[in-house]
Amino acid sequence: MATATTPGSGTGRNAIADLHGVSGIALAPASARDADRLADIRVEAMRMSLEALGRFDPVRARARFF
Image (cartoon, rainbow, N blue to C red; front, side, top):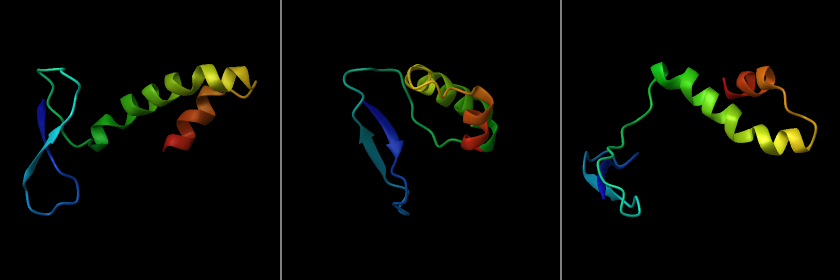
């Protein structure tokens, strides 16, 4: 189990994130520095389903993220 700050709690309290037995992972809020990598992950995650529909366009998928 990992400890993560509860979003929107405003109390600074910690909540336990259930990571199904995975250890050594710390959760942290995303920042603007993470945007490019998150866009890449989104494009790859959507690739197979959008290709099946004949609608995959990586440039458009990235643009929609931002």
